Image (cartoon, rainbow, N blue to C red; front, side, top):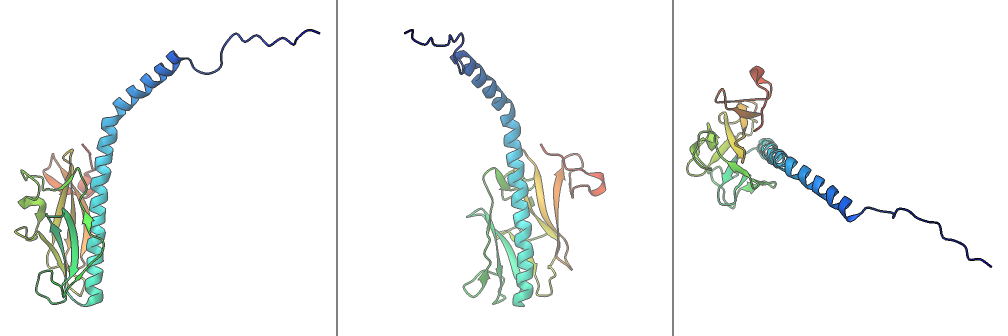
Length: 201
């Protein structure tokens, strides 16, 4: 009896070593080309996310002031590189054991800094606008009626020199607006304000 013949395979299945190396080289080139754009996008998301968190903390501080019928403040703490808020129950203008510190501290992430556009370094005089900057980096002081003592802004920057600010625009209502620094006009604008569309670097 004759043994069954195996089918003759003229080509092996799968990729050869050369084909695999070519695919890896193409993928590596694509990664190198897209990495800078991806890192810029990541930094932009960190900056915009941090400013939105800060805006939420400020809104929560306003609501807590109304609820507790006491003034409330937002501060930047350079030691922990973060923003925090407290209800000033003893009305002494400073954080103490008698006060209520709000949960939800906003930590400034790596590649984002508390920095104004004309400052030479982080935590400079222009990192805040309209509020006291020295020595405690005080921010807005909310009243139990929902108003803020005065208009002003906290400013943050990413590693590509994009600047965003969280601005209390209307003191009577505590209205908050996010604005971006326009290099050409050397001023902050909300997206679409006076025809200024945000451009990222």
